[in-house]
Amino acid sequence: DSGVTQTPKHLITATGQRVTLRCSPRSGDLSVYWYQQSLDQGLQFLIQYYNGEERAKGNILERFSAQQFPDLHSELNLSSLELGDSALYFCASSVGTGALTSGNTIYFGEGSWLTVV
Amino acid sequence: AQTVTQSQPEMSVQEAETVTLSCTYDTSESDYYLFWYKQPPSRQMILVIRQEAYKQQNATENRFSVNFQKAAKSFSLKISDSQLGDAAMYFCAYRSADSNYQLIWGAGTKLIIKP
Image 1 (spheres, each protein chain N blue to C red):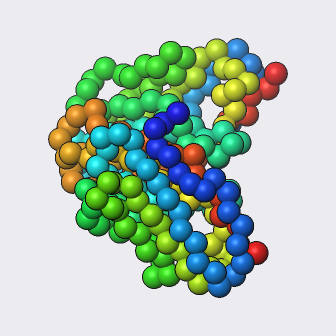
Image 2: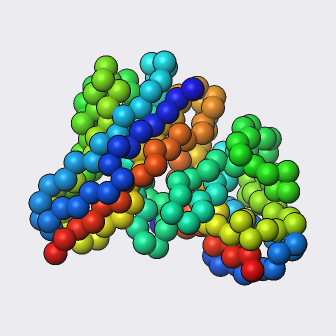
């Protein structure tokens, strides 16, 4: 158990709909990352938050948005869903202090399976 | 920009044998971290081992060890006494030590364990 909690584990929805994926980072971790993994593909970095502020943005579509709340949990909002958005969405966390410490390891949740039909 | 290359799309090994997965990377930075993650059929992403670039000693975690060659920018993973539960996709990943905490991923190597 990595300590990163993601809900829901599985989600089936129709095209055009909107869903929200939730993530609770490990206790003490300030950074949260979102990744997308389509079938038989590697991980695509979407976005990173650090202590409530957006830190880095990757290949995230305009239809997708995320935020990190004061209690450090994060939500990834996916709207106007398309069939191609079907994927495994990972949340990950790290301490993210910027120093060369053991906190620079990124731990992953179990992922949220999204199927768009 | 940093890149990570895993040149072996698939590897197979006999149970109880030893296998080495290759990873090379390209960077101009001197301080960074390297990781091996395992993704079994359940698709969960599990950290296997990590290496700090400033450490000369190769990291070891039980049956898993790395051969870190900083000058050659090589970071291979050796799995000893392979077990059926080791069957998975293995991803090599790079992370800068500066304020950008993104992981740069290799394409992955599928490891098959033959009973």
